Length: 397
Image (cartoon, rainbow, N blue to C red; front, side, top):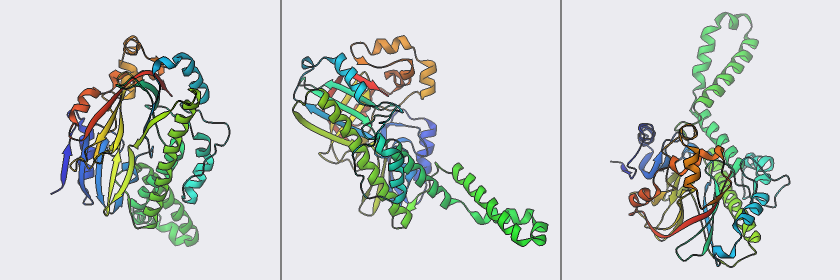
């Protein structure tokens, strides 16, 4: 009997169907949905799947290593000129699709030639850049009034290209090319009889096109690699490279802000990503939008741009596969948020917090997300809240 645990109370039918599909595979032996779970690509965001001997690139997702870091500083808000700091950050750190115009100093972990090419193409220009969507730079104060820098970002285009490459490779493996060969042969019997050489070339080209089309259609399906195969080993190697890059990316932004603040004393640094695959005792633990929460492990769970972030300590819950939520979780898609939410209410919600927000970031309104306080209540058996960081500056890409 497979172990399944659902912590979410509000869950779309599509998200549940995605989870059930994953758990129907024989190799997937345990699964959990975190309180913030909602529909994603292939697998719900907020899903954790334990697989026997198989790694699924689509269960990690496109932004490999996307995660949170938080740095506590020995200073208070009164030590800062917030509007001035905002301007300096916006000048120093590229947001959204922006990147650096020059190569950044960084040596990636060992990786395949494919990943190395992706790094040289995009990665070396994106180190220390935020990205868009729900990624953010935030400054806030904890319960002792000390300032925290909180950043949500990932591996940028570098990780995305790695993810897309291996998702396509896995999809290619799932396509039966013999079916396409048979299809072509049955439709071109006379062609074969008249000119066998041209027939074989045409068949080859036809099969390649059909495989490519079928692979694109299956890109976000439940297909993966056995971990001991060359492809499985290559994905795991390049995933680790992207995980390290994502951490270096967040650290580069944190340190850029620390410099702008005059190098205050650093008290505590926490990093925890929520898109990865972990090898554990012969199994693969996939976390797609779920925070690793082993016993005593520190983590960062963001709520929304109004309600801030929580510093948590893991309780090592086995039923949750040693995981917790990675945030509040969306209740409105981006398109529905942009079309249905009121811009005036958005600005009212954000009063007292310095931002760079416009109508274009309405899809990141607090009202587009679940109530983070309810989400935290639903995971009291997964993590212990040790601090709540309330924001006074929030910047989006």
